[in-house]
Length: 481
Image (cartoon, rainbow, N blue to C red; front, side, top):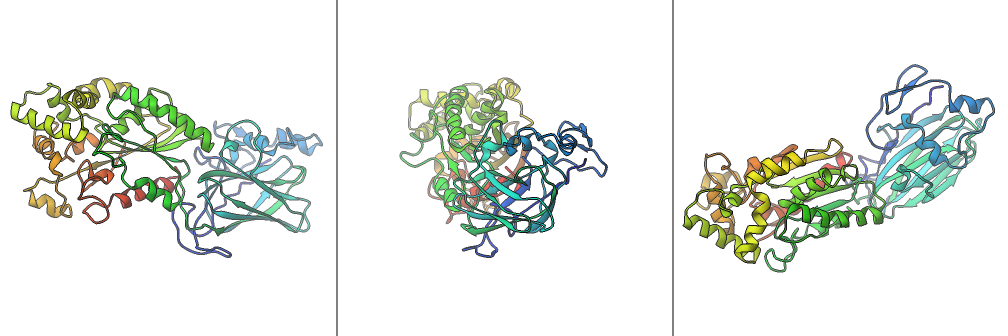
């Protein structure tokens, strides 16, 4: 028999991605996202008696449902969650109006929907069955652990009756994805139902499907610019909008394998505490290389949804080549580079050499990139910063007045030019080197403006870094990540 599918969307616009709008009983308007099935992609629904599951094999009228109609009991009838996990054909993604009609075509049928919502949202789900039918609707909301194996208790559940409404009210404890199951109370009867969702409170808050994890670049935290936090004001801004954000730390100056392993240990803790299946990395500078290493070398591709890289030297930087003697440069240029970056990193020449060791073009091109290919399960996005010289007035006019910070002038000027590896840059990373995966855009800022550091950054300057990171979060939400 062919199991009818149900697509079910949301109150208002999209879910968890953006605020706005209003709904009955809502205090401030907002969105929740509800999608049918787990998440690894949509499945086509055929018009015949069979349908395809994720492995591409048709499911015909025989099997579990047919056996149940002959009087046999459902498999694991006391655990609808396990029964639902055996039905990959319900792995659908859909959207529609507030209320959708569905049908349980036979016994042992459990319909599942993914819900993406923000911390503190109060959601109401309602399922009504026909008065003439025998279906007793049951709703159950689970956290992200439900998408895996094993028994998991629902966060909340509700039971209706034929012709009456089952109403489930749930306060979302943490932003992310949840699973809503709809089935007959005893999994014995078939029939149609109407399902609706609404937001009752906290509706303007925003969420991504997976927690956001910010990874800093080299020289981060303890040494960069004294006591300033690396991602200046960004964690507070995103959390204020509703997103779940984590900012692990690693050695300020160390190689990528060491830093990546330090991050990975903290990533394990984040996944365990949130019950999330994956995280989304938002990275700056060397943090992007660390994230790529975590995925490709340490094997975390199944636990990462996206790597967002901002001015990551994915092709290295000639500044590192010069500082480490790979390029023949004048003593004056070399001295200026060491003085500038020594002041930024707050350490000795040895610290500076160590920090730049991973950024040499030969190391990245010949060793790092071949050893860390992209994982097809992970989305890779990149942005590049592009600054302007003090006397480059045409560049400044096209970039809202952006001028490279004085500390970055030596390396910025060194990178400007037409030779290979040179060109537009942010004072450390050439635009061409920052391109990786799906390149999004260039932003008008130098390497420190990109994370809100130094005097010309922030909402009052040419580059609003807080709005930039909020836009990244919104894009991840819209992409279902």
